Amino acid sequence: MLNTAQLPIQMTPQQARHLLVRTGFAPTQAEVDKLVGKSAQAAVASIITSALASKPKYPPPAFVSQPPPLPANQLKTVEERQEQRRAQIAEGVALKAWWLREMLETPNPMAERMVLFWHNHFATSQQKVVRSQAMWQQQQLFRTHVLGSFATLLHGVARDPAMLVYLDAANSRREAPNENFAREVMELFTLGEATQGGGYNEQDIKEVARAFTGWSVDRDDFSFKFRAPVHDIFSKTVLGKVGLFNGDDVLNIMLAQPACGEFIIGKLWKEFVSPTLDKAEIKRIAKRFAQSGYAIDTALADLFTTDAFWADSNRGSLIKSPVDLVVGTLRQFAFGYSDVLPFVLKTAQLGQNLLMPPNVKGWPGYTDWINTTKLLERKNFTQQLFRAIDPAMGRMTLLKVGNAEAALALDADAFLKPYGGRADGVPNDAVKMALADVLLASSATQNIADGTVGVVYLRTLTLDPAYQLK
Image (cartoon, one colour):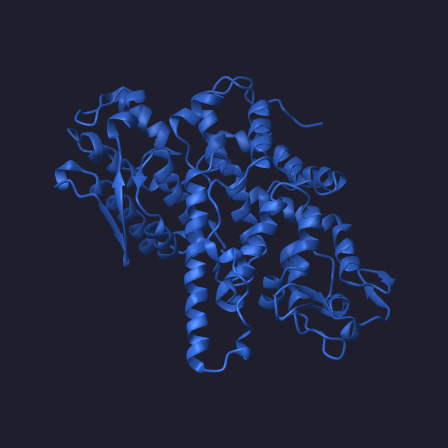
C-alpha cells in the first residue's frame, strides 16, 4: 500500500509545475493549467498513459531507410573510408537534431525524458560504434520499451549491435571470452557495484562472459548474429546457480536478484526525486517493480507518488542537465526557431553531447553538470537567447553557436500576460513573485534592479543560480 498521506488531493499551480518539470522539461503555463486541481495520482496516471502512447512527431532522418553502408574492409581506398566516416558523422548529427526537435516539440515530454534516461543508463557512443544506423536502431529499442518491461529491454540491449560493438562483445569466443560486456551488464546495467551490494565477484564476471560468447554482429547488415561454433556450451556457475547457461539465462539470473530492482529504482530515484536515497522506500518500490515483471511504468508511478517526491525539502534539489536547460528554456518561453542545430551544439558545449556520452558509465550528472566555468557558459546561453530577441539590442534575430545559426522569435507579452506583466512594463511585486514561482525552483539568490522591464527582466531571472535547479 502506498503512503499517500502527503500527496496533493487538488494540485496547486506550484505542485503541477513541479510534477511537470521533474517528469518532462520546463512546462508552459497551459500545460500547468491542465493539471491544476487534479489529484497527484490522477495527474501521474495521465502523464504515464500519454507517455506510453507517445509516437515521434517527425519522420526520421533519411539515412535510416537507406541500405547499410559497406563494411570498411570492403572499401578499396583510404579516401573511400574517410568519406564514409564523414558521412556517418553527418548522419549522427542529423539524428541528434531529429531527437532534440522531438524533445522540443513533443506533446509527451515524459517519453523523451525516459529515452534520454535509457540512453544514459545503457550508455553507447557513436564515436566508437561509428555506424549511425546502429545508433538509430538502438534508440528505437529504447523507444519501444521506454516505459514497458525493463527485463525485455535488458534482453534487447544484450543483442543490440551498437552495444555489442561498443563493449567489445561482438568478437567474444569460447577460446577468449571478452569480459567487458559481462562486467558492465552486472555493474552498470543490473546489480550495481559489487562492493555496494551487487553480490557478485570476479569469477561470476568470468562465467557470465563465457555465457555471452558467440553473441555477435553480422558484418554485412550490422544485425545481431549468434555464432554457435564459438559459443561456450559447457556448464557455468553464476551467482550460485549452475547450468549450461547462455546469455539470456544469465540475464534472468541477474533479474532474479533483489539487488537488480533496487539498483534500477535507486537510479530512477536520483533522476526524478532526490540525490539522497531513501533506502526503505527504494526497497519497497523495487519489490513491487520485480513483482510486476519489471514494469517501468509501475515503478515510475510509485516514485511519483511518494512523499519524498512532493516534499518541499526536495524542491530544487536536482541540477538541470544541459538538455534540461536548453530544451526546458525553449519550451517554457515558447521560443520560435528556424533550426535546431545550434541547440544540438549548445548541449554538447555544456557537457551533454547526445549519442556520445563520455564513457560506459554515461554522464555522471548532478554536481558534475556545474562548476564555475560551466555556470558562466549556462548563463551566457540564456543571455544569448534573450538578447537575440530584445528590441533594445537592435532587433537581433539570430542565435549563433559554432557554425550554426537560428532565427529566433519570442512573444514576451504572451508569456507575461498570465502573470499580470507586460513586455514594456516594470513588473510590480505580485508579478515578480509570480515569475519567480514559475521560473525558479528555489528562492532567488540575486536581486534585480528596480526599473528592469520586459524581456530584460525575464533574461535577468534566468541568470539567477536558482534557475539551474529543478
